[in-house]
Image 1 (cartoon, rainbow, N blue to C red):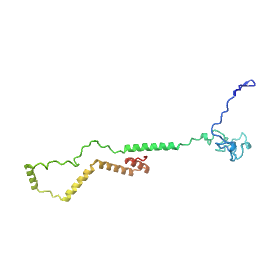
Image 2: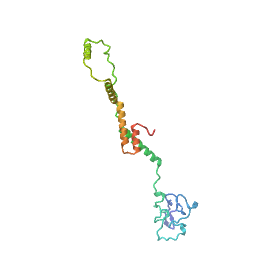
Image 3: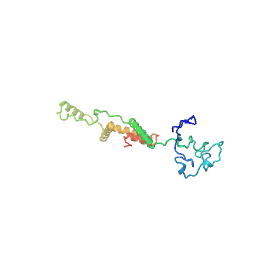
Image 4: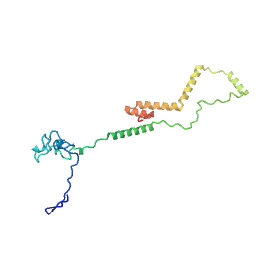
Length: 221
C-alpha cells in the first residue's frame, strides 16, 4: 500500500507481523491446527474451562488460567511451557548412536595400545639351548691323547645315578628350555593378563571389551 497521508496526517503502513510458532486453535487451544476443522471439545482461552472463549464471564481484573499448563496466563501466551516454541528440539538418535560408536572404538583402540605385548626383536640370535648343528668331531680320527683320556674315564668309578633320575633331569631341563621360548613367554603373559581381567571388580561389559582388545578381536567388523 502506498498511502502516506490521511486527512493531512502522515501515516506509515506496515505489514502485520505473523505470530511466530505453529498454528493454534481458538476452539480447543491446541497446536498445529485451526478452529475451522477442529472437532474437539471447546476450552476457554481465559479460564481454561470447557466452553468457548466468547461465552466466558471472567473479567479483565481476574487472573487468567491457561488450559495447557494451568499457569496464570492465557492459553495463547508465547511464554507458555507447553508451547512448542519453548520445548527443546527432539534428540537425533542416529547422531547419538554414531557418537556412542565412535567412543567405543576410541576406547577399544586405547585398550589395545595399553595391553599390546612387547614387540619381538627382528633379528634375534639363536639360543644355545636350541637344536645346534652337529660338530664333525666324530668323523675325525681319534688321537692317542683322546684314547688315553677315554680309557682313564672308563677306569674311574661312575656315579650312582639311576636311569630314571637321568631321564627326569633331562625332562626337567627340556621343560625349562620350553619356558624360555618367546612364544611360550608371550602365551603365559596373555594368560596372566586374562586372569587379572577376570579377577578385577569391573563390570562384565568392561571385562569383555578388555578381553576382546587383548585377543585382537574386531567387534565392529
